[in-house]
Length: 101
Image (cartoon, rainbow, N blue to C red; front, top):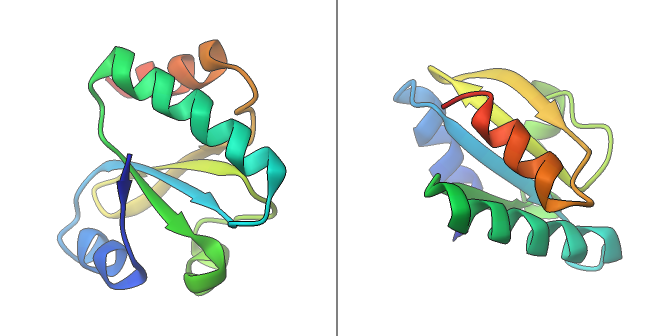
């Protein structure tokens, strides 16, 4: 998982790239479990996933329709595509990643 900041995501969107973004908050217990599941799925798929602390990137919550954390968001060509809150098991995460590859 690649830790990025708001300006990195803004540049990613501006350049109309595609990828996955994991939004979390540091004190969220579910986020810590989700990170482990995402990291396992990431290793099995060789798909890079970018991580952002939502506390430091609040401006993206409305853009990606984020209602809670943890959440995994798919961006296609610089625009919101899809998201999932089902991050409690590696199979669910892997299926979400594979939908786009």
